[in-house]
Length: 609
Image (cartoon, one colour):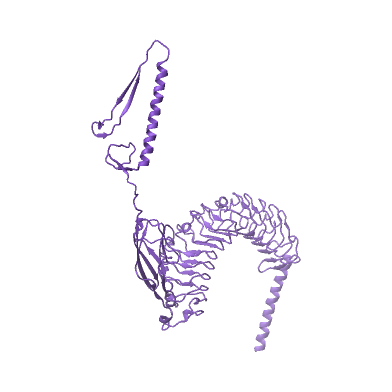
């Protein structure tokens, strides 16, 4: 019985195999697969890769969906090369030595969706090459030697959504190069020789949502570099090793949700350029020499959830650095120079889910206690942080400590000022004074100086707080007098020291001055000067002024008399006479209707007739 069933099953499977073989043979006969190619009638695929082909083979089947011509030696694509392949969806010509593509080379590929020309030797793409591709959605021309995109290069690709043009030698992109790309969503450019963002060309891409730049030779990102790209959501700038800063309005007009600026030369976080990106969720500034994340400068990025700053030069993340970021979930600051990360840096650690803190020289003290307490809720990406600067715990994974061990291991010691006695100094005006405020504690406390006006003193200026914790008052002035407060603080508390300085003003002059009172008036006197103002003049100044005045007076009178003498001797019947009158000084005269008093000096008057 069982033998009969087995024979019956064998006959059924044999019949099905023969039918399948017949279908395959008839299909193979109908396709007539070219030499050096392999045809799959089920997948409707023609695979001619690694066939040592120098041209596109003749006699290709007319109805394949996929044509693979990779890893050959094809050098030229001629006019209407694929005219009969009207059903083709995917054409891959990567890894050849293509140098020339003639105009309308792809004409007839009316159903083509994907075209790959990567890793060839193209230097330029003539206008009209992509004619006849109404449904093309993806174009890969990466890893060629393209130098320039000409005007209207892509004008026939109205359905194109993705252009991959990375690893080329672009030096120029014409202003109208992207005209016609009304559906383009993603553009990947590598312009190692581009020295500016092709702003004018990008304005043609109103539907663009993702833009990638690699290896551009720019030092700064100018204002309004991406204007008219209102739909852009993702911007990636990478390996621009000379890019040092972003202008304040460089990202103006964008509504980004993701921004990546990696492997560049930014030394500070570009807060001003970022502040208007209120929809930003993802920010990556990795592999930049950024040293500080300052407090209260991320507050405008209300929706920010992830910040990556791997492989930088971070020395400190200040208290309040992420204040206002209520949705902050991920912070990755691996491979930096951080000695700690305090809980006060976050708006709320309850929202934090992932923390990358490995490969930092961490000091395991009370400032990192919160990390251990939340270790069950945090993902460290498989790289837990270790102690580096603590002698007792060096090299330990402090996350492995038990709750009983923590109080004795992760500790801090309150600051203590070594010279706690109040200091009082009296100096003369112009001298320089230095106050010392040395403090110890674990961790090492920071020192802040407070002025008599209760304002923190900066490291610059005539009165400055030095990096060693001292206070320097240079060229002391009387207004510098007062009490200054030194505050040493760390995570465990603070200590303070009060110092005071009294600056004596310069002594008054030993020469006894003359005091000229109300009889001497000054027309240009300052608003606060009146008739009773005392003016101090020494003897030397008074003599010089009197001498100059007398010389000027006698010179003017002499000139007048000489003039009158020669005028009176002139010929003619008319007799000329001259009258000279002396008007003595009047004590007080009234003017402006008696409302104002002024002093009038003596004078000579002369009348010639």
